[in-house]
Amino acid sequence: MARKRYYVIANPIGGSKNGLEIVREIKQVFDAADADLMIHETSWSLHAREIAQNIDVDNYDGLITVGGDGTAHEAINGLMNRKDGKKIPLGMVPGGSGNSFLYGLDCHDSVNAANRILTGNTQNIDVAKIIMKDSILYSFNIIGWGLITAIARTSEKFRWWPKQRYNLSTVIELVQLQARSTKLIIDETVIDGDISFLIACNTPYTGVGMKMAPKAKLDDGKIDIIVVKEASRLQMLKLFPKVFDGSHIDSDLVDYYQVKKFELIPAENDILDIDGEITGITPIKVEMISKAIEIFV
Image (cartoon, rainbow, N blue to C red):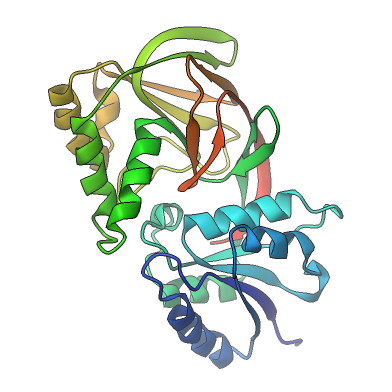
C-alpha cells in the first residue's frame, strides 16, 4: 500500500502562538502511521489561501491546517478559488484560541484531530458564498455583523486569555450596546428595523462553547440566522448565559431562521466577522453552496 501524503499549512502565530509545537506533536502521530507530511509555515496574511489555491492536489491525500478558524477560512477560500476546480479533503488541527468549528465536531486536541484524519473518514459540508460590491468570500462557519464584529475586535486585546477572551469581550460590548438599523432580506421576505445583532451560522458553535445556532447542520444546504431584536443592556446581559446551552433561541428577543440565501443591507455599511476574521464589508448577499468542501471528520 502506498504511503499516505498530506500537505500541512501551519500558522505559527495563531491562538497561543504554539503552532510549530502542535506540528511536532502531530508529526509523531503521522510518523507512527507511516504517513508523510509536507509542512509549510505561513508567513503573511492570506498566505494559507495562496497555498491552498496553488498546490498540486494530485500529489496528496489531504490538506491539513494547523491553526484556528481563520487559518481554515483562508484555506477554504483558496480551495474555492482554484482555477483547475480540483478538490482535496481538508483536515483541521486546532491551534487557535476558539476553534469553534472543531468544537462542534467534539474535537478539542491536536492528537485527536490527527487520528481522525488518518482514519480517512470524510464529510461534505456546505459553504456560504458572500457576495460584496467588489469581492466574494466564502464562509464555512459564521458571518457576524454589528455586536458580533465588535466582540471579535475587542477579543483581540485578550489573546493572552484564550479560553475566556470571547466571553469577556461579549460582556464588555454588551455594556456598550447600541441597536443598529438594517434591512434584512430572508429568502423573499423583507425585514426592516433596529436590531442588536445578527449572526449567520453554518455550525452550532461560535466563540468558545457558545451554542449560538443549536439547529445548525453542516450539510443541510441552509444557513441559520440568529437575529436579536432591539433590547436593553440588562435584557442582553440576562440573555447572554443562555447561549451556552442554546436556550436563548426560546426568548421573545430572538428570531431564528434557516434559509438558503439572505441579504444584509444596513443603514450604515460596516465591516464583518467572517469565520473569526475581521474582513469584508456590507451590504452583502449570501448564497449557500451545498456540500462544497470535503473535510476529514
